[in-house]
Each structure stands twice: as C-alpha cells, then as structure tokens.
Image 1: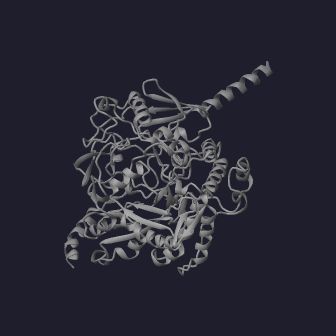
Image 2: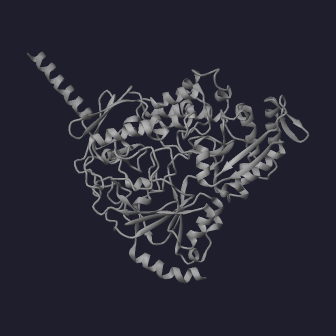
Image 3: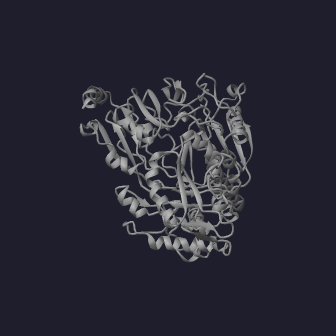
Length: 609
C-alpha cells in the first residue's frame, strides 16, 4: 500500500508540473523568464500618469498612394500601423519578450507544436464590432496568400489554423524547432473579415480602412500628408502594454521631397520631432535661431540594438557581380577612414558584421559550437572562414589608398578583367566594367561620389543616379538596379526574417527583402538551423556562423553604424525618466502644455531673426 501511495503521489506531482508548464500566460519570452509578472500595470519605461492631449507632427520623405500596408502594391502612408492592433505587443526593454494585446493569454503547447492565442472579450474594431477568432483566421490566410512576400516567409511553417472555443485560435506548426514562430504569430494585426469581404484586399486604396488601434485616420491629403486622431474610447487604453503610451491627441505626417528640405522645414517649425541619420546634418545642420534660443533640443540617446548591416549592396542577378572576387575587389575603393574624418565628423564606427553592436557578431576565428556548425560546410565555403577574421579594407584617413586599389585590381584581373587603354574591360568580350549606383536620397551622394572617383582610378565607370522615392521603391520591388545602399536591420533574436533577407526562395519573389539576390544552399541551411536553435547558446553560435558566411560572400561593402538614436525636437515634449533599451519610444512621449505655450509664444520672434 505504501508503494502504491508513493506512485500515486508521484503521478499527481507530475500532472501538477505538466499543468504548470502548459498554463496560459500573459506573455512569452524566447530567453526564459518574463520581466513583467502576472498583474503588472505598465512597462517601466512608460509614465502611466502622462497627460493626454496636444499634437505632434513628423516628416516623411517622398509620397504615398495607399492606406493598405499589407500588400505589395503601392507605397503605404507613414504611421499607418497606428490604426491596427496586433495579437501581442513587444516589450522594448527586453530582448525578445511579448505580452498580450488583443490576446488575453498565450498558451504554448508542451510539445511546442502549436500555440493558442485567446482573445480578450473587450477587443473590438473602431466600428464597435468585436474581434473574433474568425477575424484572426481570415487575416492569417489573407496575409499568407495575398500579402507581401515576407508573410509567406514568416508563416511558412504554420500547417493549419483553427478556432478553439469561443475566443481561442490555435496555430499548428510543422515542427517544434522553429522557436521564434509562436511569437511571430503574435505580431500579426487583426483585420476585420466583414469589412474586407466587400473589398479587394490586394488593391491599393485611399479609403481609410477599418482599424482597431489607438488611432484612427482623421484626414488624408494624398501624397502630401496624413493625420491620425487618438481614439477617445479606445478599447485597449488601460491594458498594461498600453498604459502611458499613445498620449498625444493628434499625429500628423507631412511629406517632403528630400531630407535636406525636410531639415529646413524642421528648423522653421513646420514639424516637431526629427530623428537624424546624417552625421553632417547633426553636427552642423541644426544651427539656427531656434536652437540658439533653446527652443530646439538635440539629444543622443544610447540603445542596445544590433546595428544591422548598412552598405553598398551588389545585385547578384547581374552577371557582372556573380564572381565573389569582383565584389571583394570593389570594396577596396571605399575609404571609410577618410569619409569618417572628412564627411562624418568622426561620428561613426566601421561596420564589419551583419550583427554589430551585439554578442551575435562573428569575431576572431570560429571556435567551439560555431566551429562545429561550420565544419559541416567545409569545402563549400571559403577556407578563410576558418582561419581569418573578416575585416573590410582599412586605410589611414589620408585619402591615399593606392595599395588597396592595387589589391583590388589583382582580384579583378584574376576574375578575367583586363585593361584596354585606361578602361577595365572583360578579357573575353571586351565589354567595359560599367555600373550604375541607384540612390533615393541626395544625402547619400556625398558618401558615394568619393567611392565613384576611386572606382574610376581602377578603370571602372560608375554612374550615380538619384531618383524619387516612389520610383526607387518600384525599382527595388523588381530588383532593377546594379548597386544601391541596402540596410538589413537585425534584432537580438534573429530568426524567420533571415529567410526573407538572404534565402534563395525570396531571391525570386518580387518585393522580397532579398535585394541582393543571394542564392546559396549553405546560407539556406544555416538559416534553417538558426531558426530551429533550441536555446540561446545555440542561437548565438548559429547566428555567428551565418554572419561569417555572409561576410565572406562579399555581398555588401559595409559602411558604418552608431549605437545611439540622434533626436532633435521642439522643446514642448517630455519623456519618461527611463528610456527603453531597444527602441526610441516616441509613443511614450507627451506634450507639456506650459512648455508648448512658451515655445509657440517665442517661435514667431525667433523665426524672424
């Protein structure tokens, strides 16, 4: 009898433990424990007592022609995501944690082959109709079948979606290896099935769509401006994930032709807040009576985000760039040290990794688990991956890069190029080395033109073509370019998005983020292994392995990065004492009515000076 009792007690304890593991939670973390426990009231980086009211104006560059951001057609309006709620919301002070928004609880099955999102009873659209499991299922199907290519990539491992009970939606997965997928599902907006049933989801539209978020569209001046109004009876206003956020009553985006014009408009008081990406503008472009009078504030706010990769990207769909020696050679024509000294006021660090500013960056030579991962591909990847740390060419800042250009020319000659007079030509066909660098902002011209001059010293003819944002967007969608400035933003938990960035399948999908046209079975395998990493240590090792193979593919000439946000604003806003580590957090700022009156009273006098 004692033995039976012990067995029974053991079974009870096991069942209890199983129930604890399977219990639905308010949130989900890839790295273990959540920072915020059950019953938390707000994120630490928000001010729950922040006053509501006032207005904020932003700038946007170019134009827009649609209010449907989910499909490939058209250029969506800035800020359009404000009108849509998602199943969950990310915490900006945790590297990879989400908490329920539309979903009240998130229940990952013990076998990790499915996740159950249970909707809140009060969740509703702006017309008052409730959000239902049918809306979630319809949204998922529409995004995967008709939405932008990234959705097919992100949701590729979902096998089926079913309603469970009155408020639950369960997503089933191909395997338990894709550890990030349950959270990616939570990023999905919830759209109204009834609303879209009478409309063509794949078309552009300037009719304000039915939303559910903290803001609704107040007015639209097509291609010129869009204004959002805070929903006074927003159903989710008091949720812990929203408390202290979305404080201003009105948000307006005004469109400008380019960044130079937009900066002048900011100094003239035509909009309120500006995030600056140009070191030259940051150092010298803001000098104005308003800045000197203290009406404009400039702040550099540190962050803990991986820098991602910004660089001059090659379109591998062009035969010109198929040989990696050619891509490696052209990197010798970019003199970062001279540019940083003469153009950037010494503000930047040279980017060398796709995951710089984080533990995910590959440094030194591969060791331990990373080495074991790469060993499987020995013979299919460059030998240098195993023996030499990747580093882009370095110079002394004097502008004398003759030795580097000679190294580049040796690579080009080895790749089948030769000189005809002073021009570099294909040794077989006699065709000259001729390339167009496509840009969408004149700001980049001062960075690219010295590179073009250095290419000319190598016998390469390079032309810079700057087009308007709409034309640039169209050409990027169809991969109609030779070289351009590319940006691959990264998170602290890379995963499914790498398929869209670098996967072979995405290379042929119009509108995908695989702008470079990479088609590498090794990279495809590394991406899948990364997605299926069982724990943080494995994730880091696989990310470093992927990083190293991308580095030695010479797909991009790395440029530079900065581990901080540069923000300028008219001094009528206040923000919480704590800044989120992984975001700028504009949505936590608020208008100080007293400061606003003071700024507006002084603005007229100052701007006359």
